[in-house]
Amino acid sequence: MDEPRVENVDTLIVGGGPVGLAASIELSRHEISSLLVEKHPDTSLFPKARLVSTRTMEILRSWGIQEEVERAGMPREDVLAVGVGTSLSAGDYLRKAAAIAEDAAQSPTYTYLCSQDILEVIMRRVAASAADVRFGTTMTDLRIDRDGVVATAVAGGVATRVRARYLIAADGGRSTIRERLGIAVEGPPPLGHMVSIMFDADFDFLPPGRRAALSFVRSTPGGAIEAVDNRRRWIMQTGYDPAGGGSADDFTEEYCLAAVRSAIGIPDHPVDIVGVMPWLQQAVVAAEFARDPVYLAGDAAHVATPQGGFGMNCGIQDAHNLAWKMAAVLRGEAGPRLLDTYAEERRPIAVRTVDESLVNAMITFQMMAGRLSMHEAIEQQAGRRGSEGLVLGFHYDSAAVIPDGTPEPAPADPYRTYVPTARPGHRAPHVWVAPGVSTLDLLGPTFTLLTATGSGWAAAPAASEVKVVEIDSAEWAEAYGVGREGAVLVRPDGHVGWRTRGADHAELEKALDVILTRS
Image: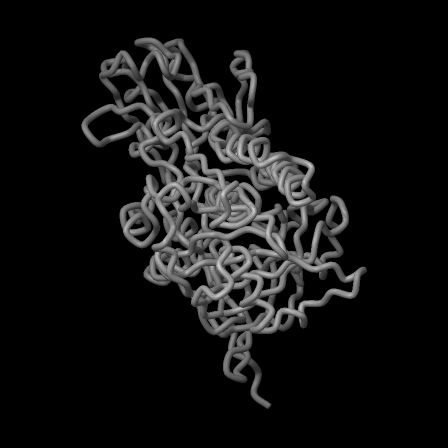
């Protein structure tokens, strides 16, 4: 038998969902070669996730696909609402819309709904335009040595040996790579055995006040109705109890039709069942995010409940954080210690995100158990739909951030309320600096030094290592807290690494040395 041919890449990515595709796109932006392998022959046929958070939309904007995703998704004003009731048609149904006007000013974009099956197609095209992306390819063997990893990838019965310096495991909640490494997950036991029923039905009979992206219904069986395209395609999420003799096998077409019609509230409403997908509701985080040269990302590192729509977004931001660090080390621009900051920065965010998703799930459980009135349920559910404090307000504390001694913002509701700040570790705030141009549009994929026009930082000794952008805006100077002489160094992932109000230009080189762990 012939020996498998050998291919060499900088990074091997295992998993072709949104997180693996995001890693591929980001590595290509940093001119790092990668190979992505995905065992399934095509992108997801089931819309497992739908909500694209504001922060993820900002990342999509940096890739140049924000408008394409918005065209493919569902209009914000029509669907960013939540409802509760005995059924969609019941007299007790209540609906409350998201506070778009309140939150949208914090970003050049905003939360959007685009189902995962559509988003993956767009992301796959972008990834494949610059990197090697292979679906229908399974990793069957993995060996770690001092030079990185050696893996076997099999497609159509043909094996290829792949050597890479690093491996990104984006292979989902049941990650075989995480299991190979013996990394445990931490968190409560599974919260429920769930089934998603995708169906086709006409909801035009519902008035606008009963149309929502997400409706929780206390029908039999109870569950949630989610818009997929907001026209004819919908999903019902419900569950079963194995301890009571329930099984995924119970979800025959007849049973699914009855469940969906009960949720709609019309026994003979025309419904076509499109697909059924069992899944396990969990809230767990991996005890470790990395064992060099392998790095876990997305569901391989953390699994949130679906309440809040955090899982996919948290995973994409894992990839966004990891890729620039991996690139800097591979290019010899950073010390290897920089990669240690991936787990230092992302794991605390994952823990908080999973915990917040668990809070959301508990509200749903209480409602379904009848421990909340419909009015109490809609207030609590709607109150948790807005999560800009969590989504935009998170910050990093690690060796790749230089504190400036300023206090962390302390809003009364850190889940709901985002307080813009350029304090090191935080996402660089959005400020319009020209018509249609945000400060965020000036960033990445390199380090960016933002400073006032005429400050002189462009002549700093280390200015050649960064992109220097001078801004003539009093609003920007106030928002970033630097005055006319200072500067803010923003990392490639859009988080502030260093800030100074002074004019000692030699400090820039020292800051880069610290952030890139070169000293």
